[in-house]
Amino acid sequence: MWNVPFVPPTASKEGEDISLLYWAISALAIFFGAIVLFGAIYLAVRYRASNNDADRSNAVDTDLRLELSWTLIPLFLAIAIFAWAAKLYADIYAPRQGYYEVFVIGKQWMWHCQHPNGVRENNELTLPAGRLVKATIISQDVIHAFSIPAFRVKRDAVPGRYNAMYFTPTKPGEYHLFCTEYCGTKHSEMIGRVRVLPEKEFQAWLERGGAGVQAGGPMTLEQKGEQLFAQLACNTCHMNPNSAVKAPDLTNLYGSKVQLADGRTVIADDAYIRESILIPGAKIHAGYQNQMPSYQGQVSEEQIIQLIAYIKSLSTATGGK
Ligand code: CUA
Image 1 (tube, rainbow, N blue to C red):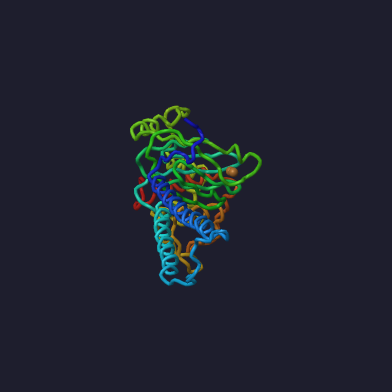
Image 2: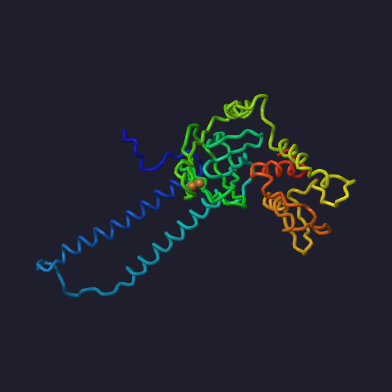
């Protein structure tokens, strides 16, 4: 009847859980608020100065049971709410397995999304219903925030850093997509839509190459990364046993422990590979020289994601993912 909903629609599994928590906290607040409000009104009326019927003898000024109960009950309720909320928080932000991954890049002033098979979307994100989704989010310029109210999720898009969040869309339909961090003049125009399709339709959509702009089907992220790897001539030093420059072999690098020249070890994850492309000298692989030129300004965030996908595919542990 009214198109002014008190809350946005709920269209994800995590969102339903968060809504339940939200309503539970609201109900508790209303319940305790009502006790205080109506208690105060009752006492004000009953003990008003003109009421001579009120019994003012033996006024109680301390009651241990009362004090314990109004201390302990809220304490346990608050601890329970904390535990409940922490669990829901972890569901969204802690690493999980068995997801469908999408890559989201924020830039002034649009959202740019890539699917693993290479399909790209602008200010639109198409997702399958009923599957856990991991959104890997980064910004190309200033801080943005990727927010889908119907899923009750949002995460900052920070330049230079991969942030992730997880959610499971449940209901096919169209939902709002917002930037919720002020990012310049056209911040309010940095909006879009999330489209959730039933699994089968989603697969068909993916295979068609998304909206159907790219004829002949798109290249996958891996394939684009491989092409880029050759275009940027990464392969003249890496993966080349005859190279004059000694550079680390990238086979089985992804996900492995890397011993650094300064004695530290790091896991070769997305963030490490991204940093090594842009600032090669930041973490030097033990046994190698700092000889690689920086690719800062030569590759976009979108291309870095493609290069990482390619390097990931060279690893047997994650190969073909
Ligand atoms: Cu991007 Cu606000």
